[in-house]
Amino acid sequence: AQRVTQPEKLLSVFKGAPVELKCNYSYSGSPELFWYVQYSRQRLQLLLRHISRESIKGFTADLNKGETSFHLKKPFAQEEDSAMYYCAPKRGNNRLAFGKGNQVVVIP
Amino acid sequence: IAGITQAPTSQILAAGRRMTLRCTQDMRHNAMYWYRQDLGLGLRLIHYSNTAGTTGKGEVPDGYSVSRANTDDFPLTLASAVPSQTSVYFCASSDSSGSQDTQYFGPGTRLTVL
Image 1 (cartoon, one colour):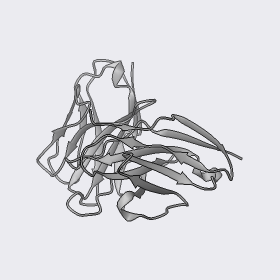
Image 2 (tube, each protein chain N blue to C red; image 1 turned 90 degrees about the vertical axis):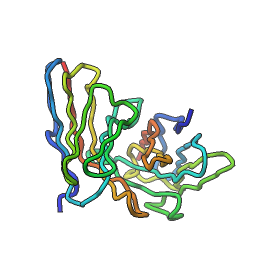
Image 3 (cartoon, chains in turn blue, brown; image 1 turned 45 degrees about the vertical axis):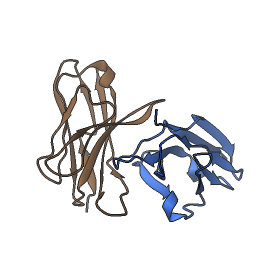
């Protein structure tokens, strides 16, 4: 079955430590991949997309087609990074399939 | 520009009652979506609409219906609410006809069915 996996529900890191959120997908072909973020009391919003190959708020994500992964990384976590993060491949029918999400807590 | 709005913000509903969650966008996006967000389950697509006049079923459509009479509005109706429909509901829209098909989300509606 096609699906997206985010294995760690809750990730606690100290401020300044690296953070990595894992995402593996099993969709066939070459799906577009996105990371969405939901900060406390804010709307869910796009963080970054793999085709842009950009760094947003210090986060990067590399698509590894061989491992079918799209892990999100940041070398130095900040308190404002505390949020819920969702990995979302775009399926062939143009809709997003969200993972179950990772709750990140950055400890001051 | 408001973007995408939802109403009500929250609602407590007795089981068996009918409820319509409203969603309006002013970005002239062709595609709109309804998701429910549940702890440990992430966001799951309920229904979607690629363009005005068309709708489609998502992952968890049972117990819900939608309509898309025009570009701006995409109401979600629970015909007879059940406690398992207690959730946070998010509406989203996107311009899926272009290359930048980012989904823009509303603020959500917190629904409790007793």
